[in-house]
Length: 367
Image (cartoon, rainbow, N blue to C red; front, top):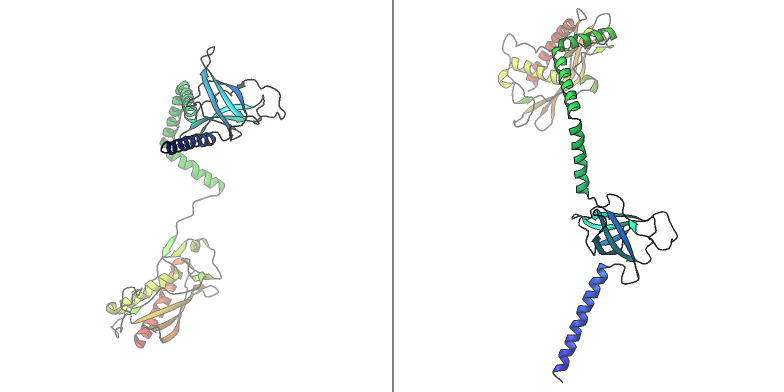
């Protein structure tokens, strides 16, 4: 007896543990506990794919019970009869809606109950009738929709082919009459006063020519960065003061913005003077000795009784360490013989040649 008693205790403990585990699993599976239940019969008019005994029953999204029975109706081959057990306090009424819902990524089916408008209990609830198509999954719904689309296309194949043929005929007609359509559009533009603006005429600035005889060569490596200026002068327009709104100048412009145009033509002028020691645009990757900083003050035509093309800028010559070696303001002007793009550009060429020669001579002297 002394050796048998521990085995009886251990066996009783194991049985109690197993019963506790089964009870806990049952409690987890049935969130409504083991309280009073109400049983209802549900009729599905159609298939219920994947629905199993033990599947959850939801009321307004809350789990209230499970499916306790499933069987086919013997008097109607399309009908499926289900039995559900839910918590006794679930407000199931005669107008409660019944459907089949599919949850999670795997699409596990559950019976979904949705409360109606009745508030008070109306006695014994008759058999609940599921809504038509309640057992239709999303996959089945997509298949049915595609089947209906295919049916519509099949029924209307001939009209669709006719419409496509009409589109092809219309596009072929447009292709054959492209020239006539262009003429019609041009006529409409002339009739409405609208017209395509003429293309811009681009003018360049002439660099200062090489001197008649070679001068003193440039000393050291010089860099001329892009000149600074106000926003008004950072443009390709040919500027007038006061403004000239004539059509010939509205369609005329410089080959580049005024700062970059001045930089390029000054470098070309230095090259014409001494190509071997001409300045560069940027100091990137170059052992720089000096840099010439320019700030544009004027680059416009001063209108009036004697129109004049004016160019003015300040120049500062700096060492590699940023020390100012020399500074000066350069300016030049030239009377415009005739106020048209060609006459204005010729005046700017003359003024620029004068100011470029002065800048080169000053720079050579200071280096």
